[in-house]
Length: 203
Image 1 (cartoon, rainbow, N blue to C red):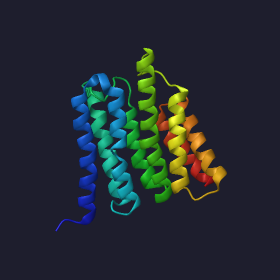
Image 2 (cartoon, one colour):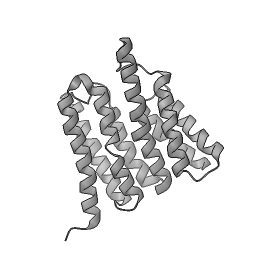
Image 3 (cartoon, rainbow, N blue to C red):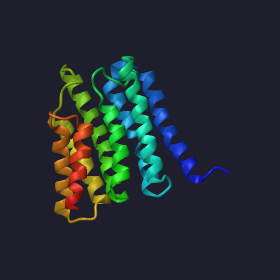
Image 4 (cartoon, helix red, strand yellow):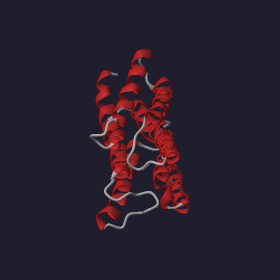
């Protein structure tokens, strides 16, 4: 009989692979939205990790392997065009960051940070995509305060559900992560997990 963690890990992987398959049908013109759909698809894995169905080491190693899987097309210059963008390694950084977070941080805090990376980042990206699509700008290169509001709102919900700290601490956590996502110096898939990990020292 298969160990239960293996079954749960298989189900979690199936959600991600299904998202990749569905987004492939949407096509490369939806690449920026497709990336965010794939972000959302890790939520079942994160929740299974939180409730102890998937061990941290299994989650961490799997995320690392998935990061390598996504890095390889970039190296070969044969990106999966329906969600990968040339010279943009955000999805690779996302996977490697997720791997480090579950292995280095306590479960509750790691879950909050992972959900912010998956849900809040996904929401803000989709809001910005449709905002700029409507206004005729290059949605692959722009950030806008409308998306940041979506990030802040969802990060606040995550903070109030999962962080064990005072209200001001939860608001501060969501606000700082929003700023880390919005800044333009470092890819947000590195900036958010890095800043979020440093914030752990205050919580």
